[in-house]
Image 1 (tube, one colour):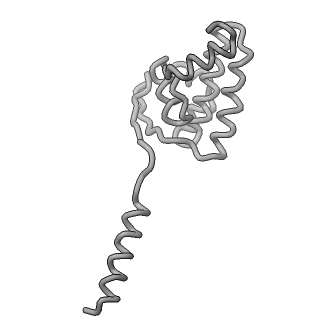
Image 2 (image 1 turned 90 degrees about the vertical axis):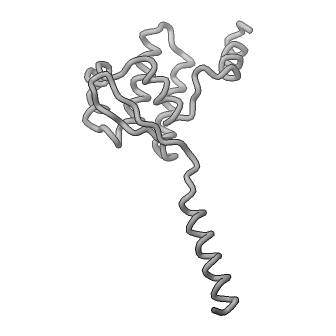
Image 3 (image 1 turned 180 degrees about the horizontal axis):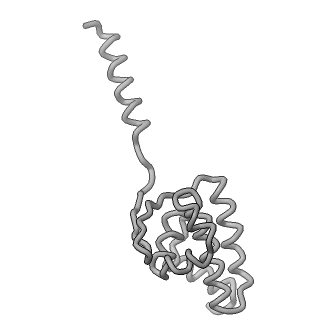
Length: 129
């Protein structure tokens, strides 16, 4: 076999392995209604929509309003995998619990709600540091 053919095979193999490299985690969670859903980071188009909803947290007045915003964000995150659930807010509220909401926010939106840096930034912005 010629040297060039061997090099071409090696380059092709490296290229195929590089293409198959996954840069994010995929997480499967079970919802309160027993459905299982696979979570992964949102594509940029849906992430923009997700972040528009999340930024409404800046103006919340109470916990109920905050939970509604989290549920709306989760609906966006679940729109592709569970569209019938994402389109039905009442059913979505029955299917979600707080730990699952946090996991959806973390995996799909990249927001780690317990992150000390995020907590410190929120405290600084609110003037309670």
